[in-house]
Image (cartoon, rainbow, N blue to C red; front, side, top):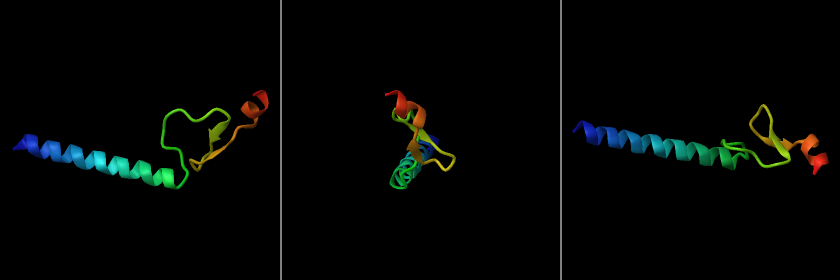
Length: 57
């Protein structure tokens, strides 16, 4: 019985995590991982052009 509760809890956590990542993507915010070359993430979690990398390319 405890195994089934743990499995259910794990499914709920996965669903909430996925929904949170989707919501951040819709707000055009960084969701983790390595950002694209030429961009940086500002304090609000949004992308902006990195002038240093932009000029070096």
